[in-house]
Length: 364
Image (cartoon, rainbow, N blue to C red; front, side, top):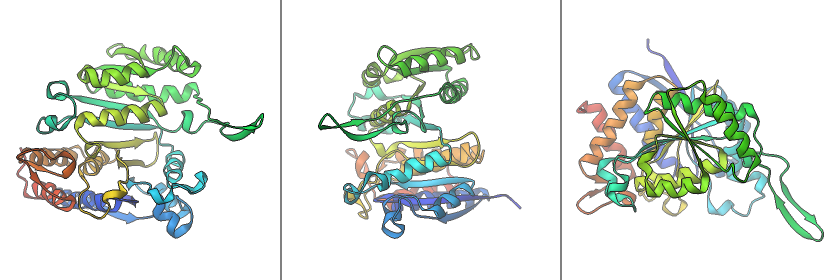
């Protein structure tokens, strides 16, 4: 009897439930074609959890996640929660589960499909062929550093956060990035702000030390502001990019637009032990919630990453990726990637089309 993979499913808010449903639909198609068994258990996170439990990450959700083989998540947040105490806003649930599961590495593949090159706001010849793996440190830096807060000083409010990294935290994310580069084109670009920030000077020092263990990898360094410029000037110069938490948050979203839409960008958040978390990189888009307009491809691609990184099911993951390519090649598009001459489809139909390609086994 084949193994059953236990997946904690956290649909979240906004379009989260509808895109997660498409991911599950495609995984069920994989199960049907390849005989792989998945066990899905849903739980609350974010605003959906606040509405029911009063907190963005209930203990029961965290317990389920810790006892699963992987976590598959939709999206977090809604405008209606913007005025809540920052300590209990939906995003706190996401930060907490990352910390509790020790998800220190966020991988975001930025791949421009030939069929979608014209969808980018950049010139087609600039983005066609782009294939970058962005590696972002996820559990340290400015978002987690102490002290932080807002207080009165000399009669006026002062807000402050602390960017802090230990050598060990830098080394583990950098070493992972080098390992990934070894399996790709053996090029690694490290992003920092070493001309201004002490923490970046330590970052660069650690990167240089770890690089000695990977003599085959071509290492380069770039300041974060220049990286932002180079990503839109000549993105094809990059293979793997590694960066600290806040820089990664900003640059990975910028890089996503090379593909034409955030709806095309998957992500994996990895740990050195325990379950990893997989989610699309886009937000909850409450303005199109329930309208069958959301692009589920990033979610489906995140599920493919789950098969690859957590379950070592490379054949099944490749089948999912090829199914998406076939559907795009045949001209089907959701609204965010729509172009002249293509066929507009909704969230559910896109999930159906990808599932049918897998089940019918008509892939190249």
